[in-house]
Image (cartoon, rainbow, N blue to C red; front, side):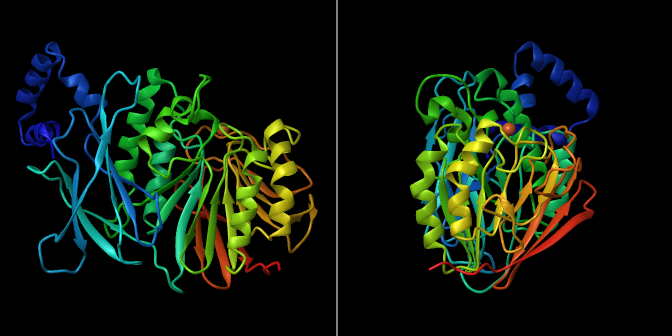
Length: 415
Ligand SMILES: [Fe+2]
């Protein structure tokens, strides 16, 4: 869609010897390095700022400021050229030396459960066509993926390939994506992450998979300042509404709450929001929460300050309002707890799964903790199917094998 991509496409058809000569010559001109660092340049990725049934936010990076940020789009199945057009905006991350432009377009007034094609461009040239699907808003089952602590190596690559083949409607990551620590010097880790994501996060029928992202400790630095200073990549790269705690309803049966385990906002400051959302989702069969540091850790200390804060400030609300499942991360293991309520075993209580092992080097879980049903070192994502009656959770390893499985039935609503 831009000069850089056009050059890359040109390279593909060239004899290898000519290409090598060109690379040597170009390297002396400082050109090749930019290609190597930004080979994903221009490819789009998806998040949500609004209702996931009727909106989609498309974002892509370019090294030059585009003349315009545009998306043309239409429903899959129409015989006409793309009839709709939306204008977006560009920004840069203050302090990021490469000066890239992050370009983003939010599509609104979409139809629920509908496949769309889109192209991104600057008005003169447009990209290849990509496809996404909005979330159904009726009784249809919802399939999604969750995990955390990804890094961007061969394990993440294999896991994303396996879960993309499951055709999920979205993939949620509960913090610690690229391990760049909000540090501009580690931008290469994000380049690797995006390249990895673009190469693998496509469903069997060619859809891009939207991301839902919570913040982790490795998204933040130690600087003084607001959200954009403390977590410049998390906010600069991923338009999700500008906060670290928010919620979406996915379909008719699932309320999905995203929280910050004290990296930018203390646990106690999210209590009112959490209760408000748990109450708003009482009529739904399932309420889940995704966050980074576990209330019920599998590797780290049970008395760790962020785990204690989660149990002190959030657990009473999880219990009171029958949270179905907590998606926990950060410990780099596989874990599935027993059902828990009031910090005790309760067969009707909340299930906690984790523990953030979707690409990072696995740790050894501690065996024998009273709240744990199963632990291992297996790298994995969870693939989760939700309908009106049950959530069916499957843990997939990097070979695509299901090595753990559990069903949660609809929780009774509280008055
Ligand atoms: Fe972490």
